[in-house]
Image (cartoon, rainbow, N blue to C red; front, side, top):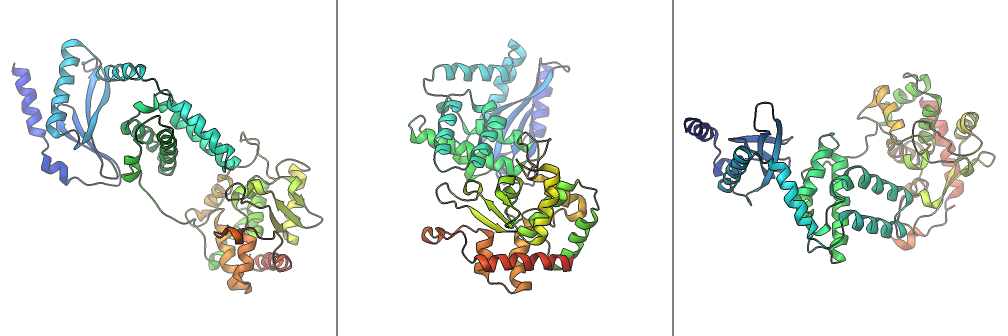
Length: 418
């Protein structure tokens, strides 16, 4: 009796109030406040509040510490959360029941009564449907990786109609632990699309991930690709010519080709020798690797300056005559990764100042300002997607003589600057 009274006194000394809880706001990271007796209130970056009960199982000092999720506030009130804590504590101490295991068992019994498809079955159907429709091969592969790595291990076996908002949240929390907020945000998008598909097919009445999209637990960051200014270009080109970080030759040549052609990084890393005609100074990027919806994409012609042809000639001795121009033995795809150039720039001291995609922004601005070339010509060479469907069906060689001249003048200018 004395021990129970002491336990109650400790709880009252730490107790929260509804007024205090309502006043709590988001911070840059999730944080927790104690109500006593192991009851914790967790507040995420978006201001969402969730009750947890921290305990040990077995209930000894050597037992494994674990957290039982009780429910969100205010749907689960302060009074109800305390009552749940006390109920679980009695089951743990008097009957030796593991609360977390008991919760999983109860959910398994609930799932066994469900007759609908699992999340994995619906996700597979959705992915196949979209891949056969407008998705590009690269996007389809990216979504498949997100499903396989983070989503299906957690949600795949669950009946689609039994999935809760908390189940979806648990997936995001696991990704947040890796400090991958952008990945968490994109993964939430995939989960929500699968559940939308399930709703459309009548497998579940509503999408439990919608609440998370409205009150995202992931910090939303809108930022542009970093890009240096014109005045900083000599510093970058000097570092590339001197190879200040002792990068391998292929990485440096990939950086130079980005600077000279200002293609998208994804177009560069997947380039194959069959697309390159060095004699004609022409690189033809296939339609399936261009940005845009399937059916609207067009192959893209890239005029190659003398400098670009020279770089490709050097690269030929390493990786020619077939396959990827920039091969890699370290990746499963056999090509260098998106981060190869970015990591090289970071090691050169341009972290947060420049990235591979930044070469496009640099060229778009300075081809106009330094060379006086019209935006319509630069835009066509950048293969910007036209929002107007009629305008999108352009001649692939539109402004071709002007583009050939522009690319050579740009390469000569880089030689002068760096």
